[in-house]
Amino acid sequence: MNVDLNSIQDIPDSLLDKLASHNDLFLQNNFSDSLSEHWKLAPLVSELNEYCLTNNVIGIHFTRSVKSSILSNGLLSQSGSEFRDNFLESYSHLFTTEELLEIKRRWLSYFGTTGCEERDFRIFFNFTDDALRNGGADELLGMFGGEQITMCFDNDGDCSISEKLSLIGDPLIVRCSIDPHRVETYIEQPWGKILMSAYHKHINPGACRIDQDGSVTYPISKR
Image (cartoon, rainbow, N blue to C red; front, side):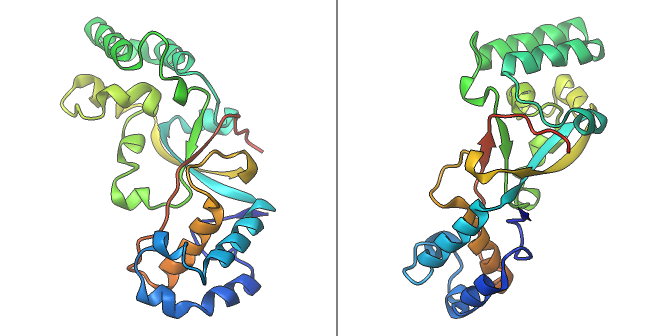
């Protein structure tokens, strides 16, 4: 089973009943982050987290890419240098000689001769669609190639290179089934907290919910 952390649709009835017994807390508080540590809710967060660990979770990958490539190849786990080399091989004809020199100059300046290893071979995911409303996905959807290509051009809207990057591919929201045991996140019990937060938002639409990034280091193939 795939658990959609963005909604309450996959929460079992037994856990929904337990959550509903704390509706007063959800209505009185607007911050899921602090509620997840509340002594009444912390055990329930653990239960929700264990439930997710017995299933797969849905990861949301925001990108601007070529849809047919993702449908054929899935999401590839590559080093940044490999990704950038492939980009030049496929799209260098779209840029002038001066633009190509500027692209390489910025890449070298930003990523260095060894690149940013912390991003190498990683595919990043969100687990809610909040980034569509708070601007977090704008640059990922707006320019081709993600951080490994566009990080140096994010704040350069008048640059001809940025304009061309915004014309390649299409904005895509890729939903993937992921083994939660293989996702690296930055908080404890992330799945329980995100799912509890989805319920909080359902009961209290004004609540500020938890949206935790995560990454995997293996390719996501099309099934």
